[in-house]
Length: 438
Image 1 (cartoon, rainbow, N blue to C red):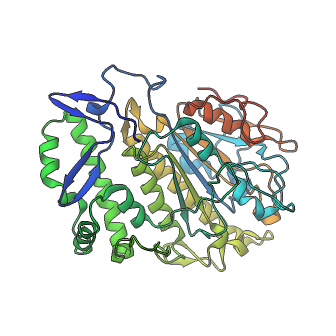
Image 2: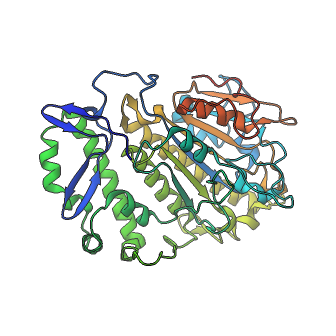
Image 3: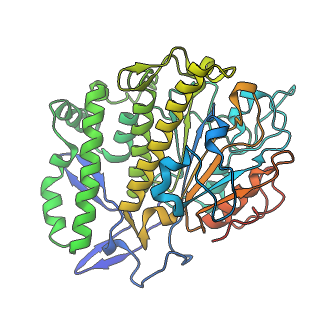
């Protein structure tokens, strides 16, 4: 059951989960001032909802241009992090972190959020992932306890989300399906009718136009601006999904589960990544969930588009085994920089959107990293890890011993505590992460 907070704005009583309705569909509202608590709260107040977005590329990035050469609060941005310089005070970068005894090259990809040991051993069973552990302890606070997403993902074999019994939770890889799940409600006939209208360049916003106009009149200036910004994001996403042809699918039948299909050409990896990041942002912005995981399955990605009309010379996995060949390194750097630019766009979106007590980024932890420290050598140590937002004191490079790594799960414990989970242990942790302060 969803947790409800009774709120008052003018003469209108709203619940935390409030919808605009029309033509048999319903659209969840974003975070608005009139839906905030009646007493003001600061970003550090325990009553302010905390959120978490966990992102991993299972082939990682080139280590040398990612890691800074200096450490501390006055560190010099590395070539890759320079792509994020506008938000340098909003993120921290870490070196010398990994999961102890979590070795085996690509076999570790399912252990990024679990820290399970020896994934190549006989009889290995994974352990619970960070997102599911948090959801267990926090309980059902939103419509979806968590959302587990994927890009180009091999759904039968890979996931960031695992149950307490070590069972893989399949990732959702269709933005259109996720969009319907989050924003379109109603009977099968009404949903199908709305999908057909969208194919004719309609919009879900058209279906709730009357409701929108009535509701907007009761809002203050800031809330109207937030609503406009939210609707703009939805229209942009609809346009991208229409372009990708995703709305040509009919709603999933009730009698049988529809097999997942590609969103777009698998070669358009970064376009798909961008779509899923936008979906994750909308999910957090609408408070549909507060915990999202997103795995970019580079391993399963064939020849892919680097930029404009330029394509890689081979599949992502083969490319990652560059053997110091300059042509491969140059292509990998272009791919890595595209990822950094997508992160920059994500940070920009989360800073522009207002949460309950300021920028949404301030109450949303965004973790980006990989199980692979160096894909070229199948090295699973010194993992590339970046954490943004969430109310932590950022703008620093926390450098730990690159030979004797500190447990990545120490960072996870710090994140869990920030999320409101009263726990001092997770996975292979030995405590919280030294140097990371709220």
